[in-house]
Image (cartoon, rainbow, N blue to C red; front, side, top):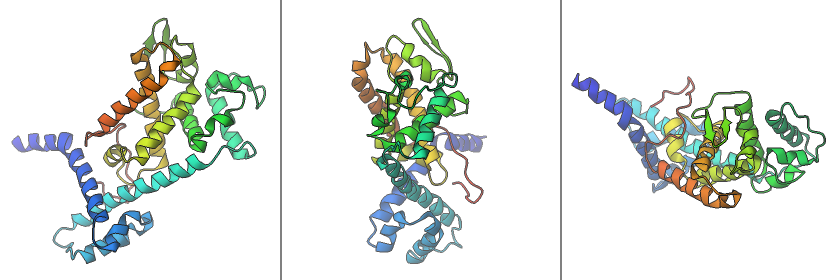
Length: 299
């Protein structure tokens, strides 16, 4: 009975914390090594990880016959470390790519955003004041993507699909009550403008994209991704995290009860600090676990 209690306590409380600490120690040890081969191991291509593990074992003269699980654990660590760096590069590439109205793929994605959010209201023209209905500042949304590039559009489309197609992602808003208003799941995008203390959905979505981006490049999201992604975190994981942050910000905004939109920066900064505090906890996971592929034994 005592052993079972200890095992339960370990699985519930200690395992995730120890896993995160091991990842951090492994990364720090490799980067701080005197060996160039070890220093560069955190920058290898994912396809080269197995060979890198063999090089580490050889360099450190580790006998896998004594501890065969060590190689698997080290591979899992390196997959997450390398994956996080690659995710930053992928996100940065999208952020730096400007929206191009001459690009058919960009235009198609923008129109998809409209159809997801306003399925029963056809867009009368590409340049139209209708864009203000979903929270853009003017009659051409491309000007609002200048700060976050295609990353902002990608995230808005992902969030709108998750809402209107009712795709499951964790910690959705559910039902939020505001004086004189009831907000149900699937109504985040259109009803927000009707609140007494409203905000522009698209502009705030781009702003929260910026928040998620800063959390990623600063390394703050390592806590989250190391705890929930059994392998290398991907753009899909980042977008799911953005959806979570958007939903949490919406609830936070209502709880703060701002007088008007002029308080947005204050509320955003307070929300950002709250998320940072949460991510300082080694056991923190903003969203539950993602599935591992069959090729990896998840440690």
